[in-house]
Length: 277
Image (cartoon, rainbow, N blue to C red; front, top):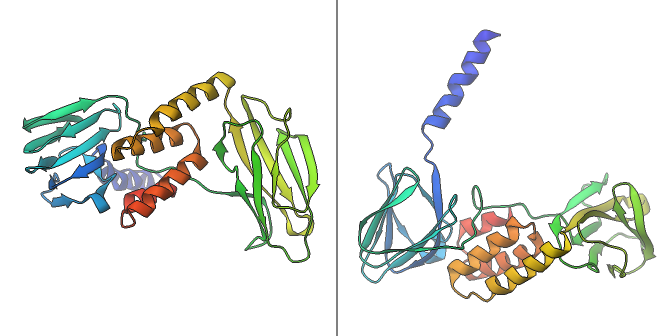
């Protein structure tokens, strides 16, 4: 048994030793910008492909004449605007200016680790490989409305009516049969500061559903005010900051619509696509 333990330890050690810690991500690119990595590779950043490109410890960033790049740090949530004819190096988790001008901007939002968060549906119970009922919204997200519209897809042959239920814990607080594919929750059912499950019961085809959370009332007010201020930003770096603010507050469905806009704008960007995985 001791031999096996030692083998596992030695196999894991190289993974820790050779990893370069991520410092931040590229939030905007203009003109010619190059990154020389710690292992000597030279990468020319392109706006269509390298928005959200990870910047790691040991990287050197060179901005040529007329160029500009914005890097947002993961830990400090600070924006570093590196201007034309400037060079910096990431050393021990900090930006060191080699030459030129670097402007520091506060108030950015970025993920704690990586660039992604999961957005998707949950099947609570079904024995069917390709279910004919699929919950659409709200699923695995926070919402800011006490009367949301529940939306699902129904493609089951022979099934016209389903039963829709909302639960807190094991208690059913709302139930209604319907033949349509959406339903607005009546007033007085939902409360601030609660987590809910909602189910679409298709009888023999299974039960499908998801969860959503409504934050406390004051938090909802604060989030709405923050959204209003962040949404006004038209700069790419501000738009990305807005997406990460939404994800950071569990507003996955709000974030999904913003990510889809970015996907259409930057169809070749793999880092933006990763946000939805």
